[in-house]
Length: 248
Ligand code: JA5
Image (tube, rainbow, N blue to C red):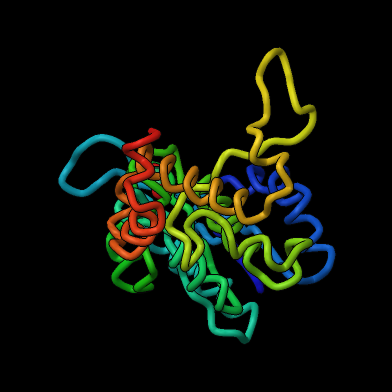
């Protein structure tokens, strides 16, 4: 899978790209990430990439020519059809179903904004997918682009050591529960012990405990995820009572 990132701050990426999981995936040719500076497509004496908004107002707007020309040029660097994605707080929410959808494409071109945003004609011409990673404001789309790459590559076959390990993740399709508490050695630390059931060797009891933990935690922290009545019903039916309200 090939990613191209278009940004005014390409120097933000090498540190992230050299990080373990992604570095291994790149070294093994499973993923290819190319970072480009939008300014390379800016013209004129000052290579200006932004300008003041028509109609007045604060801040600067990304100019249409360098962004559209850079995306077009980068798309031509590879024959595979690219999905063009713009990172913007106005975009649709980037969630795990969307991660799964992107992981099925061969090529993604990520366009990072800066300043007050993009000239609308960039969006009208390129018709990109507009994605937001969450309801907060960032100084630019770069960190959001890294989030997208990070979430997508771990779904690619061969990137994670254990092929199964992404299947059980919170939010993977078929899982709408937060993960349960995890413990490793030592069994006791400063008076804090590992729950007995995890040391019992009773795999059925352990599975049941984990399921209950997950459900309770989800109910407490992210009740919105339980909108799926199937998940809700399953846990209430199995225990005969509502585990979350009884223990939590
Ligand atoms: C801000 C000029 O998904 C959260 C995001 C916030 C944010 C993004 S994506 N892009 C920008 C931006 O600020 O371009």
